[in-house]
Amino acid sequence: MLNIAVLVSGGGTNLQALIDAEKNGILKNGHIKLVISSSVDAYALQRARNNGIDSFVLTKKEYANVDDYSDALVKKLDEYSTDLVILAGFLTIFSKKVTDAYKNKIINIHPALIPSFCGKGYYGLHVHEAVLASGVKVTGATVHFVTEECDGGPIILQKAVNVLDDDTPETLQKRVMHEAEWKLLPEAASLFCQGRLIIDGKKVHIKEEM
Ligand code: GAR
Image 1 (tube, rainbow, N blue to C red):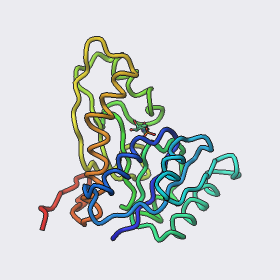
Image 2 (tube, protein in one colour):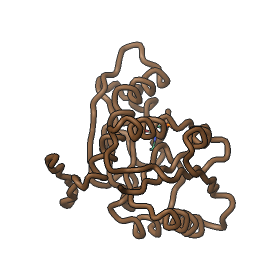
Image 3 (cartoon, helix red, strand yellow):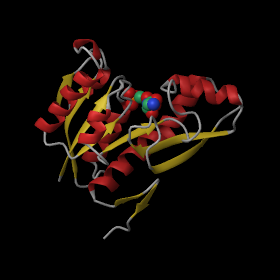
């Protein structure tokens, strides 16, 4: 059984999807042991408490710089013998120290079809605002490995979601979460925990179930 740490900053609906997936057996061979929030008020912390998961707040302002913040993050992840780090709406930047310490062991959910609408400044509702402004008819969600390059790591899973004529950023965000994110993230976590993800350069191959 692999130890999972989930990093959050907000409402934590993706964390909830992971907790539910562990309970109902969709998330195989993984156990959520730790939640770290970069914000004191994140409702995700309440979700962790409701489910008896240890949780900690690590805010950037407590540290002099990104490297010190990253050291603290790695220390906490190490303390819990973390095998997989899941960024589930984690909006705080960390440095190479984290991606080096947990190389090929960090995955992120992004609310668009990478390589579109991603990179610096594309997070949360801003992504959906940009999608609507562009006039595209299809968006979606992506789960990818985290490397030093923002939203640039190997893609694990993607799912498309239609954009509707009368969508607002809020309605689109909800539909992307409901139709894509909450399914995709537990599925990717499960594949990782079963050892079924093989990274081959920019590509990720998924091994058949044994
Ligand atoms: C999710 O839509 C997630 O994809 C997004 O933040 C939201 C968090 O919601 N992440 C990013 O934009 C990262 N670039 P949640 O706290 O309810 O899971």
